[in-house]
Length: 372
Image (cartoon, rainbow, N blue to C red):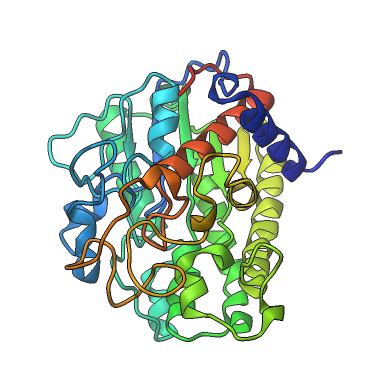
């Protein structure tokens, strides 16, 4: 049997060679999207929590400048993967759960920038500071249950409500590792967290399926060794620390380790719930394909590892002078960059990843959507 990665790469090749018109879900008729995760999917919950702290810059321009002409709490210059998925299904962009009086008839976004898969108590025990929020995956699930109780009153009724809903369960887990790495923990120590993180994602997916979710996308983690933040903070004078793409090998191998465990958990869920359709979104290989093919995809060749919005060093990233802060510039053409602020991607990179997901979903699910 061919691997998931093989089919993902095939889907990417379809998009790269033909373009977004080929990337269509066909005949699924999704009527809602429910999104969970962290800053890769948050459309404003962290801003509405009002506890931004050192991450307050996301509440201001240039965040959101490309598409919204204002900041919405999205950690990019414009739209996110979840936005492109919604548009492809002719659904409105998802409102954040914490937005008062928001309209939720076509789904809800529960993701929170800075969120972790594991509960706050896990990090407290290890003396690791959670920098932005304690609204971890279990908190988001509780929000979902509260929302569900407002639209249905029985298990059968709720299952009917969710019958034509798409669930985006992640990306989640990246911050569990980021917080530890950025606070000086070793790769070997953080590797010991992986089973806990993957189990939390698996348990959340199981809970969603038990509630009535039948169609889930569960993304893996990005190749963090290619991120400007990691390349700056863990810079090495040893050429052997880098791979052929000039990414940090050990950190990318860590991401692969997480993703391998996650794919194993997904396969177990498929065996446990044969009626559910669970799609693994290979964010690692999707982003690597963009990096490797950056020039042919329209990105500025010399900017494949640089942040568009930032300052300092080879990667345009300085943890003490983050995007949105005083005197920190943004590049004039974000569409030429893969990386937005050194931690998150640009709208253009997210667009290509979303199209790859749709192409893969078309192959696996035969679902209906329009070109984006």
